[in-house]
Image (tube, rainbow over the protein chains, first blue to last red):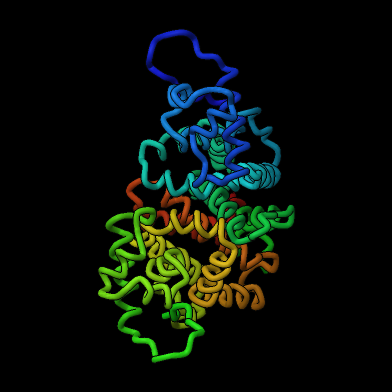
Length: 201
Length: 201
């Protein structure tokens, strides 16, 4: 799991239990009250610590909440290089699972608004995603293009943005926020075969 | 161009010049101050009218701003049913053009946050998009599947969400907000041919 932003200040070693308690409190509270009404003070109180202790760890609410909402971005085991079709389906399903969790659904709209207005935050969020799951996806796709398993003109960055963006908009389009396995199959089939793809008459 | 939400109240016919002045004021102000700091009072003042006059026309800021940010959603001329590949490239380029305008970039993040928390607004925004450009796209894609031009298992709704979502995330990913024609070609190629598509070795 990625570390919180490190403070440059010298002093006693930080207590990782406080990091975890703050992240857990942020995760709970954003689901309970929504991003807009979430305050660092309330997070600190629920975590049994103080606002200054939170601000020593994270520059602000958005930096903290995006870590709480997306805790599973560590690279994890490398994709096992099964058939590309299987790996793409797994990639779409994993993206759906990450975005559809209550904490992500509660945090995402507010985070998107903040990211657009704050280039430093935007860069931090992107770097965290790229170092994590999306980085593994990128490597798998580059290998697929290199090995001839995928068309040579496919841009892995565009594919990853497409999976992420399609998931985001599909969740917004469905008030119940449910994206079933049929949706995963449908998007995967489109990305693998395209409109004019191999099964086209 | 779509009408503003109509008031059920009887009375004098509404003055369409006020509608237009309010929409134009909202468009200018959201670019100048951002969505979060935009107020209905400031919009009314710039438009030379009053807050009550605005609220007689739109239930609130988000309803007004989404019309100001996306004025071009009328169905327009039906796609001319050229080759599907050309129509898909035109669809991706049109979506890029709509989302990349300064007013849309300024309004979108705030609107997304409001849409998620407000099912009535969400339904109104989706209905407006579906009645406009996205409706024409949907018809074109349904015809392509029916005529055998596109694979029969392609879901037009998933394709439209994919184009919209990919565009949205690509804009967020690029702080300068520039999506060039190479990006349009790259996404179009992916959607048309897929990873394993006809040019695949």
